[in-house]
Image 1 (cartoon, rainbow, N blue to C red):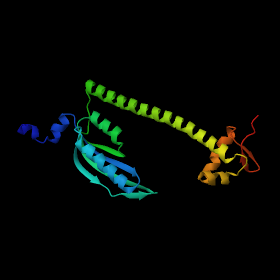
Image 2 (image 1 turned 45 degrees about the vertical axis):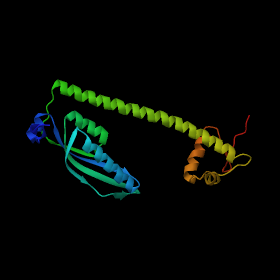
Image 3 (image 1 turned 180 degrees about the vertical axis):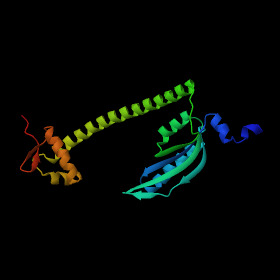
Image 4 (image 1 turned 90 degrees about the horizontal axis):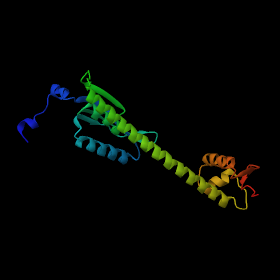
Length: 204
């Protein structure tokens, strides 16, 4: 590598090349505390190693407990190689805050704008596919859970009616949650309620 290729670009040179200087905050929420620390560490390692960005400032917060969860954030200042790469950053890292510091005015050529919109569309299509897949998986999972609950009720109520509290104790589910499940099964005709007790419907 020659000497010129190692030379640090000036801000004006970076801007002339279409680079964008950005301040952003990335937050991670979860538990336990060590998982959040590890996630932030791995996230920043991948970000630093990306050829699309050049980190100039980085400040990581300490874990903070919020309603049983732990929150950490990292505040960054970095150069993105282009506005397209900045768009990808937003999709990949989901920053809670983002500010473009330089340049103050952005100019697009038709090819650059086309590339930006195509990158944006590709990301949106990718997200749409993920959402559809999750919806399908949830539908299958919900059907499996319904079958498990019907089988459980057939076993738990065989020969004897029981209250919602009794069924909750057998299933190990909080009574308030069990009541919603029982109402759903009753509405679907899988259970029958009489005198505050649930029983299996009489087969015709």
